[in-house]
Amino acid sequence: MVRQARCSHILVDTQQEAYDLYNQIMSGANFAQLAAQRSKCPSGRQGGDLGWFGRGQMVKPFEDAAFSYNPGDVTIVQTQFGWHVIYITGQR
Image 1 (tube, helix red, strand yellow):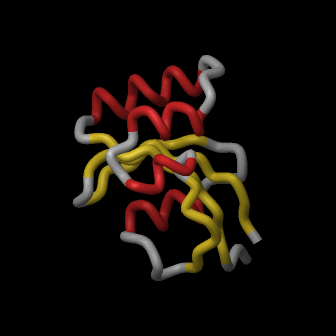
Image 2 (cartoon, one colour):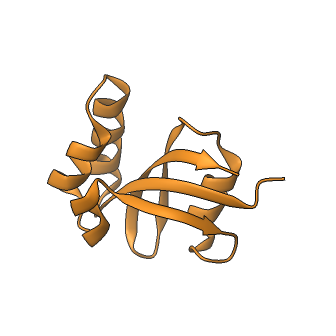
Image 3 (cartoon, rainbow, N blue to C red):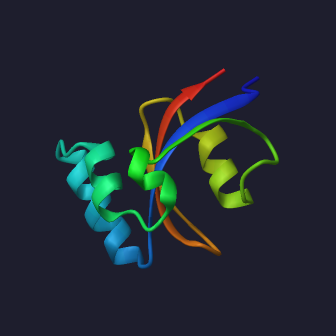
């Protein structure tokens, strides 16, 4: 059972922005560079790295994605903060 996840994310205002970023990443763009350039979240300045976290530490849609996908996967979720492009970088 996965007890912790590690993710990087890019937070944007619109679904269209999130899908545009997702498509760039899937085409080979550097996630950390895009996070530093486009994320409206302060963690974006560090490449979007959120570090390790356990269940109950993130908002539910974000947590569900972090614990449902596999390391290396990229997905998009909407929360009350906006649209997140999430890169799952680890699980343990």
